[in-house]
Amino acid sequence: MRPNGGLSSSGTQNMQSSTGQYSTQAGDPAHPVQHSVMTANSLGFFLRAVEIPFERGSNFCSSGTNPGALTASGALAICSDSTLSVKTLSGSFLPPVPRLLQCPCHLIQLRPHKMFPKTFHKHLVPALLAGLALRLFFIWRFPFYSGDTAYYEELARNWLYHGIYGFYSHGQLLPSDARGPGYPAFLAGIYFLGGRGRLVVMLAQAFVDLATSVLAAGTAARLSGDAPDATRTRVAAAALWLTALCPFTANYAAVPLTEVLATFFTALALLIFLVPAGMEVDRIASNRDALRAVKIWFAGGLAVGLGTLVRPETPLLLVAVLVALWLRYRRPANWKKLTLATLWMIAGLLLPLTPWAARNALSVGRVQFLAPRYAETYGDVLPTGFYAWTKTWMFRFRDAYLFTWKLPVQPIEVKNLPSYAADSSEEFSRVASLLDQYNRTHGMTRSLDLQFAELARERSKHHPIRTYVWVPLERSASMWFTPRTTLLPFSGRLWPLAESYHYNATEFEVTLGFALLNILYVVIFLAAAWSCRTNPGVLLIVTFIVVRTAFLTQLQTCEPRYVLVCFPALLAAGAQLFRRSEPKGPSKEIVNA
Image (cartoon, rainbow, N blue to C red; front, side, top):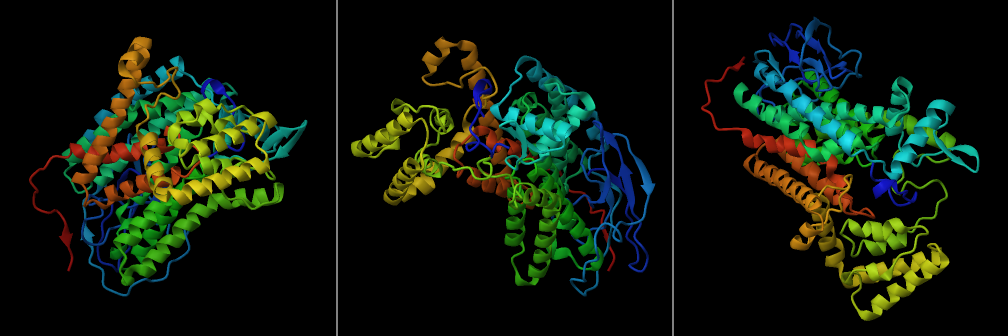
């Protein structure tokens, strides 16, 4: 993404991209379990029912066998609700699951329980209204249009009005797989319903982002599921307010890009995966338990699959979930159930991706499940050697504007090369010569790219720790702590402090405020992660953030927006600091021996 709507080359920027009430009474195993389902309408979203059990011990630590329940899968149904008696979906939703264990099951009677306590609802309307006001402010004062915006809009228009998902080339509309179809489909739906104005798109994104705030509140409530209602209300409300008023995510409602939709699907998938019946693998003791867990695994994988159609790195959440499960239940006795969980998550992931891969095979001649890493079209020659060279030294976001995004034809000035990009005067002269050849030929030739690749290999061989440890760590710090003013008319400049302040006091104050707020969010998260280090849900979020950050350090640039999708999860975990120790009353669980 470039400021002021500058276009990016096709080879440099692609990786930009349950609540409810239930009633369950578990009686004699010989009798059927009664289920209930809630349907609700929240923020204009109608949520279909899938089986997602939830009860008070939702931090994966309660004892006994979790009774199943039907509940809204989207984690937004929290306002008004009506309860309907329905039959279990086990016969129609998924195929039967073979019995995993032959052992008696001790059932627990739990009182009916909502995702959010009743006292939480008083926070819902004011928090969402405040969040909407913040997003409308950004839309009104700071609308932004990236170079990638034009690509997504063209794909949506061509798909909607001409029936072809692709770009015009030499006057001919040709199919393309350079971008995943998720966000263009979102745009096409808005164009069909509300017209082609960008303002309509931004308003729709504002409401999707508010829905993500509710998902974050649900995640926070689930992480504190073993706490009293008053504590859960406080934690969920804190997560709701923190996410609704987070300017970093709210700002992206004002730009037609994938961030808002990708963040929504990531938050939805995380909320589904945090359901205890799917994460407490060692307590699957019957066919009913297995079927309940399978539905959760499949639904979570499906949400990740839908998110993958928006941003190709979304499956990193699935990787984090599987890493957390396999590490926690690594005993051989659990391997069969872990394998089953892995297969059903992958099945859910592949369900929405398979039609896309089949379309690519028929239209562009290659089976492509994910959007290409560099957003290249079939047959493009990519400057991978140049990218490999920049990965041996580049960690500042500003260097992407000065080097990476200059390709394929804009001149690169040697004077912008930082001193740490060359280890000696001879190496600096060599780099300067290569850049001079690039500038004179007005493009990156194959021969030049191979020479940059050789230079990258030499630097990595001589300083492997720097290339594979220090530079990724520096990139991580840059992505997490660079002031998030990319979409604002500010440079983000802070140093030197006195000079930056005198240059533009307003810009300096906004940049400093955003930097301090960003640090505050991270500190809150780290403090909560340490205080709740025995909570498996919090550990899952930590794993997700670490896995995603580690992967993103290997891209050709290190944009701060790459970690934006982590913020709802980060704030939901950080809200656990609002838990206060309270005396535990007598257990209300009755175990039938």
